[in-house]
Amino acid sequence: MTLVEHSAAAAPADPDVLLAQRFTSAAIRYLTLLACGLSQDSMDLLTSVTDRLRAAEGALRDPLTSDLGFD
Image 1 (spheres, rainbow, N blue to C red):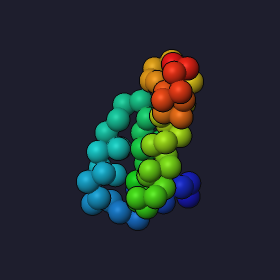
Image 2 (image 1 turned 90 degrees about the vertical axis):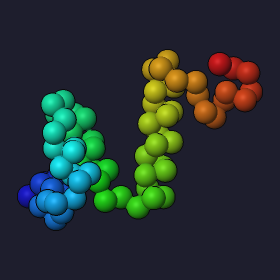
Image 3 (image 1 turned 180 degrees about the vertical axis):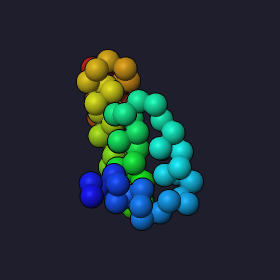
Image 4 (image 1 turned 90 degrees about the horizontal axis):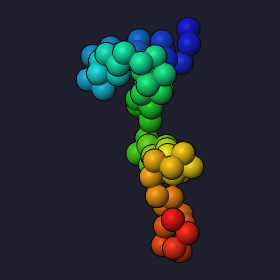
């Protein structure tokens, strides 16, 4: 059983899991299912990493350097 299968099996009535399973993009569905059930601290870390990745791709200002005037 994979981590995603375990997450889905552990809480089939969880509205977050039910919503995540509806994504048509397999990559988004996988990432969302992996995030389901994480602690708030882990969610904050995941959000921070995602912000940095989007900044690296030019989709967002880099939160670590935006106040330094490099953006």
